[in-house]
Length: 330
Image 1: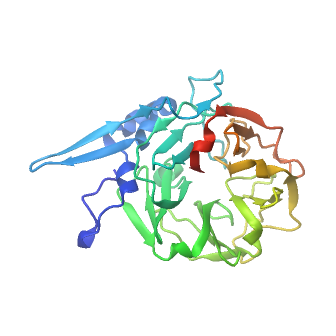
Image 2: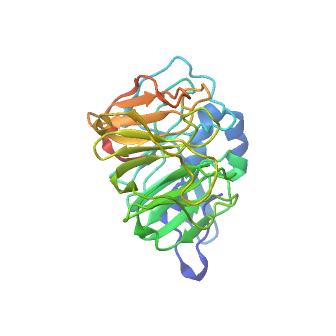
Image 3: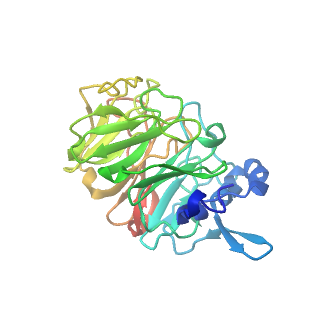
């Protein structure tokens, strides 16, 4: 469970920690009915404090006003993770601070949105990683001011990772870049240096290791899976000019040696997209994919091929419109 009575010394638990919550009583239900109930495990939990009791109200709202997804034929069975390739939901945050959960269909595309509630408007960075419950949980890192927090979907508390994180102008998942056993974070500083913070089983991050330099010209960085088919986690970046590059991973966490050169041009003209993310294997074929929303509000799936020279197939539309309403997709 994530809702705690408060932090030692009177520190108030941040609003996102109270919103992004799980009731232990529904965990068994979540595991039994993953494809339908899983969004409930990240639904809104409200604590109403009375003199003698606390009331927890679970709210799961399928939002009719959220962007529409293109429906697929497979609705009954939920996706299963392929070894080494995570299968994760797509999260979106709107300007009013509401967070929406789009679970994967498993055949390409996403299900109807579940409104997880508000409280996220002040978060300046949000990242999901699969750490808790031996990688079965979908956990959240978020930055409020200069402080980075970690809250587990299947855990006992929200943790303060540390302060000073406002020195970075970009925070994204690192996946298991560098060959570590747990997904970590990638952070870029104002000088364009990219840093890897290795993940640990308890959500706490290890000491940073320099992953590379010269990333100041990149406005999107994605590291969620193996895009080349060699079993190593790779890096996808987009330049401000719209060129998409693939940096093949080396599988090592050595300073400045986590990715190899020369980088591979994966595409051009990608500046028509205002968001480029990866939720792992969205279509269930065992390969990591990309998801992008364009400036007109459509959502597109780029299926991974596992081939370094042509890492993505021709795009497939999976959302019909309204996706520009999100100021963050992750």
